[in-house]
Amino acid sequence: MRHAPGSARHAHAVTHTETRTRERRQRLAIEAARLISEGGIRDYHLAKRKAADRLGIHDDASLPRNSEIHEALRDYQRLFLAQSHPQLLRERREAAARAMEFFFEFEPRLVGAVLEGSADAHSAVCLHLYADDAERVPVFLAEHRIPAETSTRRIRLDRDRSMDAPVWLFAADDLPFDITVLPRDALRQPPLDRIDEKPMQRASLSALQELLAEPEDW
Image 1 (cartoon, rainbow, N blue to C red):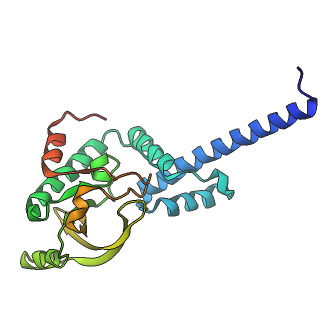
Image 2 (image 1 turned 60 degrees about the vertical axis):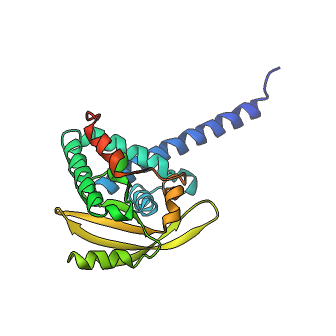
Image 3 (image 1 turned 90 degrees about the vertical axis):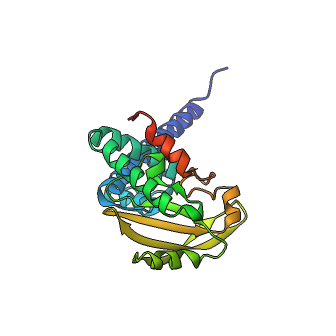
């Protein structure tokens, strides 16, 4: 059965619109990834909005998902930072291992860009520490004369539960560190990742040491 000419034109128009939207999403994801890598923007939502302003694309359907920006960021690093990125990443992972030995009593876990491989020159080493009494961490920092700034961060423990977790920011080994303190029962299940809302990737000290022992794959 032949399609009516109007139906064919409508199908073509829909396909054309969908193709343009995909192309715009890709352009925005690439520009947002560049802003993250070069400008040190940590907020994916802010990066995509800035990218949209720069490219003059303002329809919400063209805004990429965080996972698309993340993949574009990895592609950007492979393309433009192939020489420097592996060493940068290794230095941060080695610094993370030393910090995890230091914070061993708090059962630390490495999370974020340093673990999953998208860290750049602006990335902090992000650790989760676990203590039912969160005040033990600033006391520990003070005992070791480590000046730190405090903040809070909204953490999604699972689909139904969230909490405002204390955060401590300081510098060591000429690198920024970002320490989030969670209750010990949070060790049983990783909180949700802000990028894809799936359980967050995290690594214990032994897992990180195994990762450091593996050949570099870039």
